[in-house]
Picture 1 (cartoon, one colour):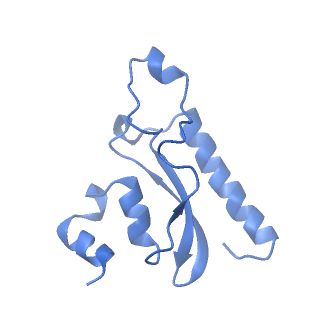
Picture 2: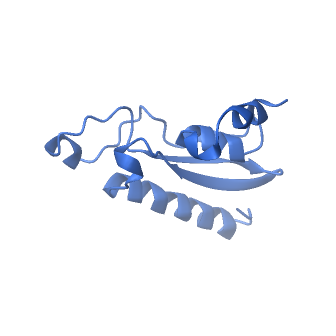
Length: 110
């Protein structure tokens, strides 16, 4: 049984964190996070709202493969402010779309 299959046999897909969901969707060993959890890109508004960031803004963007084909994946962490997305998360999502579009323009169907 693969690590992903074992993980999914123990938890529902919804219960998994964003990184776990992204890894479960991608081919084994292909997950490459583009901006890691401690590469602190945070909204300046969090401190004003009294929100203590745990590691990042709740949006995970990575590259990998699905059935051997290149993909860009974005996942939202439900445990970070209930899965809400702010300006930094929105910028990361937009960046993921731009990256996939750029790959397509360069002949890499993503």
